[in-house]
Length: 174
Length: 103
Image (cartoon, rainbow over all chains, first blue to last red; front, side):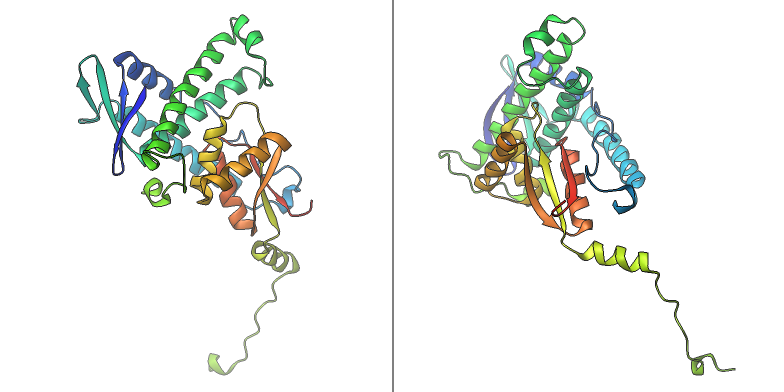
């Protein structure tokens, strides 16, 4: 998948049909991380913590369900994909790119956790183990798509220079 | 009897409640992002830009601090805002926590 062009808030990526199928398959694995995976703090006592952790987790679960539904619709929406010779043009807003980055990162981190949270440089060991090899492959694929999406956001903002003044928060929050 | 003429005595808030309210307004909490060997550097920079509205330069400086020193203090905030930021960072699957400043 490669960034092609940006038109205002819309980004266009060039993707092969099998790339689209792969991206869809990866997104279907969301959510891969438990909502309780991350602790709110490391050093504070239980009674010092803000109230409502359970409520926050519940709200995150509901949000994940909504994201999953939106992900499923994304691949079948009219006008989302346009055939161009052997490729597809995939159109996304900056907010949709951001959401997809979140989804792919969730899957990537989820695989890393399932592989035993290995330290850096453990690729060879993971690749040679039949249980962890598919997890490593999924992580790498997510990373490739994430790289292409980040490249698209960067090049939209800086079509001809490497100078970057930051993203428009409004674009991503709308 | 006329209620309006009767002086009303409100119950005093108990000490725990007052302490909690004061803590919630005190910018004595820090949001820390911890290093992990799995998140992409460009992705972490992107998340800092989106969540805090930082320039790429500032976001990269904190990202590099996480990468090289194992952690970076991102902001000092009230309890409520620190919690908000930590939840935002968790939404992007970054390992972040809130701690008391100086702990």
